[in-house]
Image (cartoon, rainbow, N blue to C red; front, side):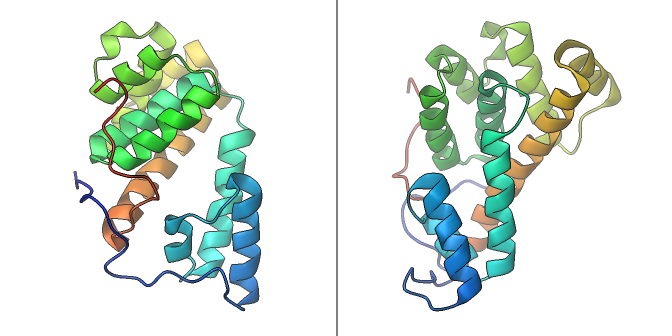
Length: 189
């Protein structure tokens, strides 16, 4: 997978300033401020495609706030995706979000290191599912096990969520967009 270079803005796209007068971009930026309190570097680069940015923020809001599957499973899954893509910045941002949601730091360290044998069965299953999605798709036995243990809705949500974060990592790498965090090592390193 592509590793994120350290530091800097996009070398390929110019950030769209928050002072823009484009109505669609202004609306997307307002959504970003409502969701996160600011407009990230990622969003200012994605604003080169304001319709896509607006939809991205809408989906992200729902993925962050409205899923049936608990953060104790989603956050380790996201960190697994980031680890497999070599994207320490996405991992670092989600370690912060996970901590704020009350996810145990040991769970996050295990996901960040890939040492899932230290996780409980459901957490390990969520990480295994995320790894399978990154690898090209979850095999039927794994999906069936997730459905049985976690529920059908929760399994579908985990597949969608981890696929979204695969997209985040690929967009970051392809557009050379680096989120607003300093380069960071996963928790515990």
